[in-house]
Length: 342
Image (tube, rainbow, N blue to C red):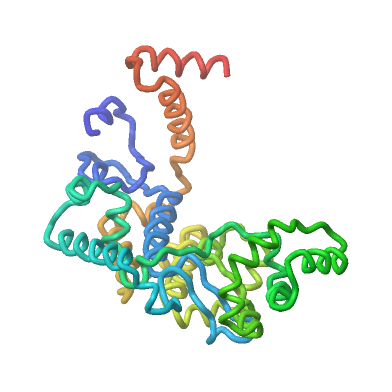
C-alpha cells in the first residue's frame, strides 16, 4: 500500500474504509473513514447477532402479547413421542460436534470428518439450545387453498362424506372445489380434528405472524410495508421486553447515524468514549477508538470514497465476465474499451 501511494506525491487526504492496512501507513496523510462503511459495518455486526438471538418467526397473539408463541428457537409444544430415535441421534451428533469445536477442532476439519457442509457444521456449533433448535421446523410448508375452510371441514367431516362436503362448500361459496383435494385434506388432518376440540384449534389461529427480517428492517429504518410497520409499532415495546437487544441496537444505531449525518463531532466523541454493557456495541465502539481520528474526520469533512466504490463495482463486473482466464493486459484493454464506448 505504501509503495502504491508513493506514486502520488501530492496526495494529502485519504478517504477509505476501516481496513487495518491503512493504519500502518507512514507519511502525513489525513485519514477520513467512509461514512457508508461505518454504518454498514455496524448493521452487519448487529444483524449477525440478532439472527442468533431472535427466532425467524414470532407469533403474536391477537388477544395479548403475553400469550404469544414463537417458532424455531424458543418454546415449541410437542409430545414425548416426538423424541424419536432419529431425533436423539441427531441431538447427540450436534452435542458431539459442539464439544469438539470447544476443544479446538476447526469447522473445515469437522466438515471433512462428518461429511457435512461447513455451513451445516457452523449452524450446529452456533445453536444456543440444541434441544429445541434441532427440531425440524415444518411451519414453512406449502399452504393449501382449503386452509381458510379447515375449521368448517373439521366440523363437517365427522358427519358427512367428502362428496357432500364438496357440494356444500361449492353451494355456499360459489366456487369449485376438488374432491381429491378435499379427501386428501381430510385424511391429512383427521387425527388433528379427532384429538382436538375445534374451538381450541380456532384459538390457536388467533395470532399475527411477524418475521424477523421485517423487525430488522424496522429498527434500522429501512423500507417496510405499512401493514408490518403498524404491527411492529403496536407491539414493539412488548417484543423489547422479551428481546432487550432490539431496543439497545435501535437506540444506538439511531443516535450514531444521526450524529454522523449531522456531522456532530461532540456527539460522535461522546458515543465513542462511552462504555456499553452490550458486548456487540462495546466491541464495535472499541474498533472505532482504534481508528479514532479517521472517524472524527468523517464528521468534519465532506469527503467520501463513493465514486471510487462505484468504479470498483464496474471493474469487478468486467473481471467476473472474463472468468479469471485472462491476463492483466487484456483486463486493462477491456476496461479502457468499455470506458470509451459504453
